[in-house]
Length: 323
Image (cartoon, rainbow, N blue to C red; front, top):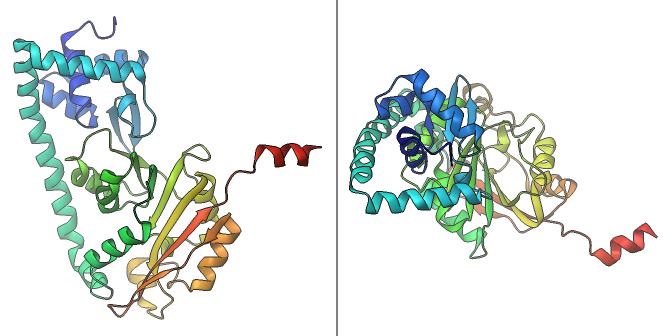
């Protein structure tokens, strides 16, 4: 409560309830110096009402209640209290509205940065997309393959532009969008900033060393990612580690092909995969392979491979094994 006993810190909490922000971005919205805002942020973090996470040289702030998976009951209560205050306190409401107008400039700057990044790489991406089925067809096929079953807590490995997180966030309890590239995370942050802050969490990380506890996710997705893996077995073993018993994995990638130039131009480590190789990889990782789906609308065939994680052993079986 002492940490909240300052008007600036109340504004910071309200802003972080809308989206993740860097300290510099907060200072810009609040119209205060970065050192002063950093001191306020430090107080909130020490109280457990905010938390920092680093992406390269940038440090972003978020509320623990809005990290997509799990929550902080006190943080959630503070968020509800501030929403009521904005509705009922005329002065606080006016301050929040002014902050939101400044926040719009932050959103616009992120979108401009993403647009510039796309413009610099558009020719390469357009050429690669021309080789396979249209993105809309792939997305529809993936949504159909996942069916109507709940997605639960979802991990999007190699989120890239964030499109898969955007597509499935409405159906999931929460989505963690992970990427190793800081550039791509900036693009994804711009693309996903229209979604509720509680719906998607952006995380920098490597698919060979996922920064998550075991058995954390109900659904794991690798969309056009596995062909970058020098060791696909290690990548799937790590994905299996964080998948809950009875959880699912979906791999969207190219069927085996001979377009050797993709290695040099796009850094593909693997020229697609056969159904047998993926089934073997899934089985070795502890998934039960399901029937794949093929999209043959282009020179490169896109495949959707699904797997289900083995269920946890029954308690009785475990006791018997111990005896």
